[in-house]
Image (cartoon, rainbow, N blue to C red):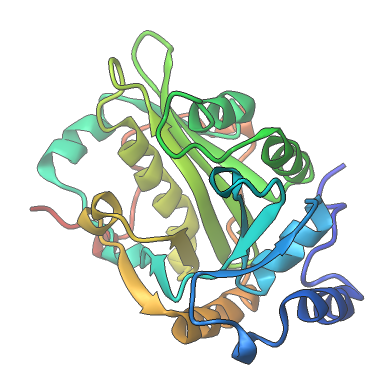
Length: 260
């Protein structure tokens, strides 16, 4: 069964968001001028999905010694405008070196992103359980990059609600997967922008890596306005995993590709 978890567009979800999120975190106009908005002791799929529609996302605070969940809305939010994606000459070559797919190896992608050897790891068992449930219900999707030996060498996953795609994490195999996470990101942008859609690709915090691909920062107020617009738009038609396998790009919007 898909899409059985509460969605912001479902009947009664507005009351859920209003009664629970505002009670916990206050009105958005009262949120603190810091990235961390509030805390909860537990995490569940319904609350998480509703939080994305309000401009929040979860991340544990284990390094601080707190075992609960922090809810974040960066004062300067990272977004990647779909038509601003930069594809360098070297990345173009990589696009033809890997095969990409959608939702064929979600658990493996999640494991790659959760690799405990990565610095600042935050994907714990609670996070894995909630995003796996959301994936099984059709709200979370993965993009995979495979090499010629059939190895999964990179990928990403995120939350898809109407016109919003909130990227959560990405990874690549440093030995076999040079540019593999970037290739997965290009595939994601192609899926999100197919048919001329202009959705919102949220990358949470802007890193130099994402900035090199066209990512920008916007103030929280601007992000929330973009989010409201995105939630009123239809989302992509995600392909079935078996039909999603592709090498290179299939008719990407010309405005979405730039070389440097």
